[in-house]
Image (cartoon, rainbow, N blue to C red; front, side, top):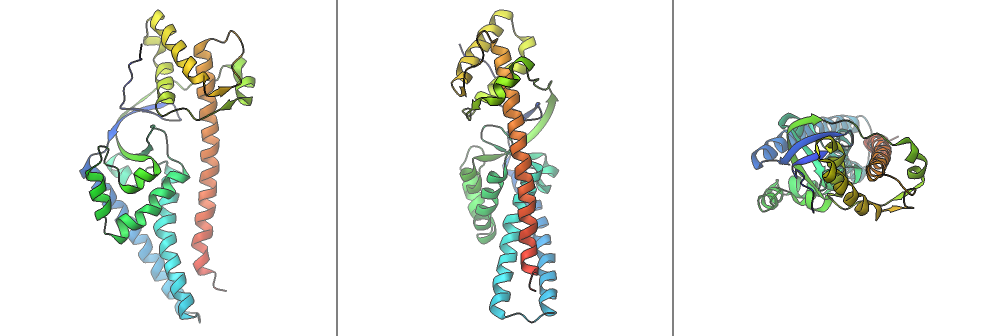
Length: 274
């Protein structure tokens, strides 16, 4: 028996269920236009400042040209990567239109996803005037551009949000799960677990037990060692979910810090001319 879930829900790491669907073509284009304008302004002022700086120093033309290209690349790749990593997929344009970039499994994007989107965006958006992005998105059911296809992400339209209680770590399982090897769950399974745990009070006793057992059997395939004998399925699912959430938060925190350091170092490079 399969459990009924709402495919339009995203359960975030903060235990917030957000009703979403793939963003409309119009909202994606408008959001992209805002982002392009904002990034264009940032690039304009950086180029102006860089040009003024070069005017005060004696720099070889070849070196100046190389630094100028480096500045453009760093801006077009570094700034979007930094913004999407720190905001978890909500740039200025997306925030204004109520959009968010999410992974295919509904989870928050990380540095890797943001970097791939920004890197590919240099070609499909800036070099080709956005035509490649528009054409590809028109033929994809979720409106993905090429960068999304390679990164495994898509633009979601957040329609509403409802808060659910955070998943609490069962204290008796904390020592075990902290040492457990938890492999990446297949797309959708983690979402099903979170949805189940947030809706247990609304389920009939028999259905709750059966569905909890079925999910526990599936999740246990990706966890080693197995939980202590006699562990209740719901306690097992809660422990794994809470541990995955905490580990993901730690990874996101490190990636945000590393992205900020890399972006700062990259933006300082063109100006370190001696």
